[in-house]
Image (cartoon, rainbow, N blue to C red):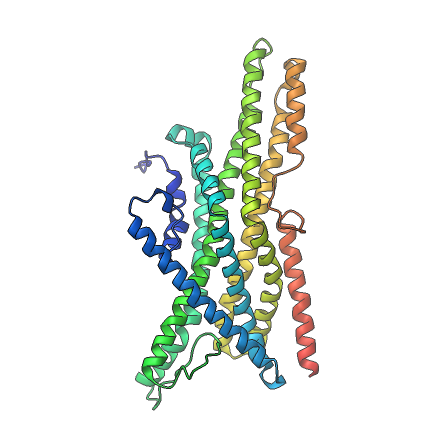
Length: 404
């Protein structure tokens, strides 16, 4: 018996559901401008700003711990251990700042994409939306799992370990340790009340950093998926257009519509670059050092620390790959438009039609891309360069540490 197909079309907000809900969990409401409850909006803003003030105080504590640990060679490994967490925190912070500053641009971008989104089931089949959505869901699920696994493991492993030792293994004392290396201006382990308040404060800060880091990339995945879907649709329409010689007026109207559609997609890509360019620049600069320090911890630590840092390493590498993969996908989808235009039966059409088609092909030779400042367009080649640079830093660090 065949499974019955879902007859309801996928709304644009359905594709946005995961990043929107996770953002709301830290107080960031992307669609606050549509809210009919101003009190709820105000409370979410207070929750967001309070959380980020707390988070940045913790980051300052990590930085103080880092510089104190650099003073002595005996504690330099602790500085290396906290360095990836500082890098992750700074990238999360900068992504949230970019999101806040570019909120109007983001809203305009999402509203344009929502207007362009195919509304009926028939149209969505033409756009092959289900194929794009299926890939997008898999990517979102994998990256979300890794990112939350990293923050959860770092946050709760010390408490779980201490609880097992104290309650099940007969240890006389409960080890009051934290998952992150942070300097405090007070004794955070002096008694249970201070310890557990501080512990949950750190856990919330870690969750907020993880969500800010995660959701910016999930939004990028949703947006690039949509734009690639539109480029793919343009390519399909161009390649399958019959180009009947006796219908020159209809041919020109069709091509003018496709050119305008193509131009709108290119403008959306520029909006993405305006929103993400600087945060991606910091992301890639930090990624090489971050992967290097994490890899060093994996090679120089105990088994339990290795497992924790392996999750962190996978998260960092998958995040860089994710951005590079979607950058590569965007380049390929936009280049495909020119190939599709050339593959149609243009030789049956009028000279003026061919002239317009030539302009479309020429424009498509400069592909749409994600471009951080001073960086070439992001693609899978970028990923290989980041990994190569990380290995070079790692080899230098290992050599320097071994010589001393």
